[in-house]
Image (cartoon, rainbow, N blue to C red; front, side, top):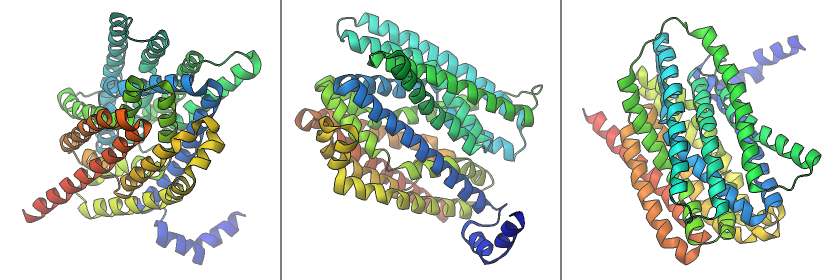
Length: 451
């Protein structure tokens, strides 16, 4: 069998594969391998996340699923200030330090990021709980309990986020994605199934959030194990250097940019919960969850190429940078097309068959979100390019403008059109974000070329 494999690789088939993906040790081969691997893992992750949404929607019903979605949206927003921009900084700086053999800075950055993020997440959780107590009576008892559980989960989410980003910086792309995107939803589904099967307890939004916290803790333990193995193999524990002022400055820009980038993702849910009903939150959240499957190819590409963009920029290889960006955009668009056609032509039937007859009203928002996500994917990884090439300040400005526009549109559209208004605000924001980034990159590259 081994002899046959060698003959195939040395024959016409092997030569053809080499022309497409490059030689085994080439940059093209490594990017192709990592991208395909990440796509497979992301597909598994999205399948698990999607299955989780389906299971919870059926077990909890529209109202409690809406409350669960609210808690997860708040948690998703708070994890950004809790990690203080360190996830993207870890990917960029560890990749750059590795190519320069600055291993002492790697260990110093890891320690600084972990301690700072843990402290920030605990402070946010405590302040958030006190804020809820101060506003007692302004929220329902159900909402208060859901938000308290989100605060409890925050430190665990923050640590897991940093661990996954650190592994990406070490070019362990597939291990990073497996621990951070597959293990958590898988653990959650297994634990949820065990409770339902063996204990026969009635499922509630509170139990779902508690089990989600447990799944995050289990996943963090595995991620910690993999990261420590990498550190023992590559970095001396006796030599640590600090560059805190530079790290904090870059990390804060990235944190602000990441937080602003999350606003279009969660503003629709939060404004709907404020102005409309939990049922309409459930309709919109299901549509958003389904449409979020479209950019899975782009997310896989972004994950695979992020360390490479930082390394190519560090050695000033502009030609390879442009090539990586172009190929990444084409690949992401190709992977998005089948889902775009499915949700455009049969979105309502898809929702009814998967989520149940109560979720058919999500078809309109799904169509609007599908069109917005497709344009977003086709324009490629432009924001990632800005961040990985040291222009996080420009990325923050672009994202802030988009976030402000999104909030205004949600406040204007939701009272009139409900979930469809939230979907319209989200789609316009996605397109506006990428067109701003594209315009800035074109202008800046032209200026650079004339100097």
